[in-house]
Length: 102
Image (cartoon, rainbow, N blue to C red; front, side):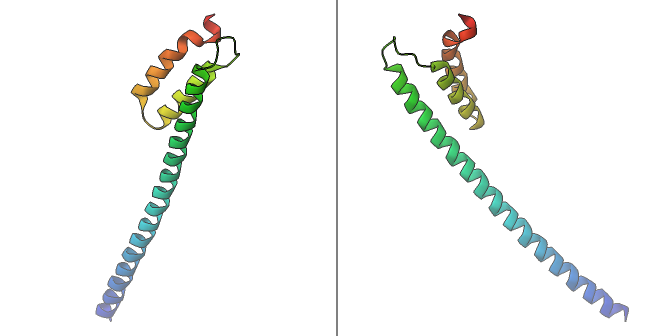
């Protein structure tokens, strides 16, 4: 009787371990998909902000363009991507444009 119970318990544990592995793998796939999407959206945002910055830099000085805002949004995206050194460069470039410094 005890031998049969131990065998059933061993089988149940094996099934549970298999299910746990399946659930863990599914959760990992979901997280990879989410992080992949976020990374893609951040990369797209970075590209658009860089294009915006390039265009606004070429506008005549008399055009009222809020370059500080573009710089700071780019800094946020770069930080979110983990590109802190590059973000610091753009942050430093934005300092002369800050309204509270004028």
